[in-house]
Image (cartoon, rainbow, N blue to C red):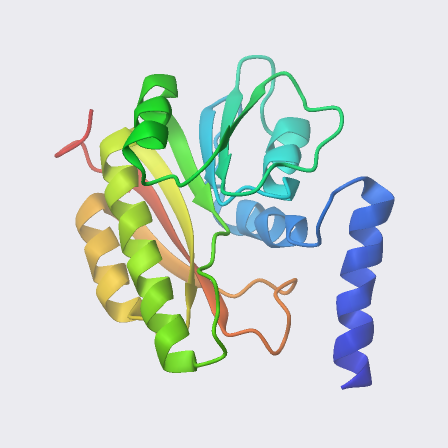
Amino acid sequence: MAHKRSQSDSYTKRAQKEGYPARSVYKLKELQRRFAPVPRGGSILDIGAAPGSWSLYVHRKLLGSGGRITAVDLLPLKLSPLPNRITPLQGDAFSPEIMQKITELGPYDAVISDAAPATTGNRTIDTARSEELGLEIINLARTVLVPGGNLVIKLFQGGGEAALTEKMRRDFSRVKSCKPKASRSESFEIFLIGTGKHTEGGL
């Protein structure tokens, strides 16, 4: 247990040292190294973006001179100063008002999400909520991604991974799952990565 804690603390300390608001940045860093879901210089939608580590990493490392990020969350970003190519949208990503703004700022080359539902401690309920959230993000990505675009979503294991993977396979050329090393060892989260969105049903 001490080893788990010290490993967890090392990611947190490293994030603080490198100026990121949360350790979650290292999950995206590994996913990017392994699957390259975020194209350089692209238009990116970050769902569940707060406190802002994923958006900040994309801004620092992947935006180049022409990219931009739309960052959506119920909570405000903790990025000060806020980089000028990150557009924050505070609210429910699936509400009509925020959906309209997301659509107006699109289309996107990648949709990335570290979002998780509010947890209850009851794994059956939590995984069901995670599956529902994942499905909403997949459906949103279908409407706002460009053909050839990519998607990253988080899912609690036991939350219908097989069904959601199959659904993503209908939309993307390649679908992989991964639990990054920076995920807490006791966490049952995994990420599904879809690359190469099919033209059918695209924009």
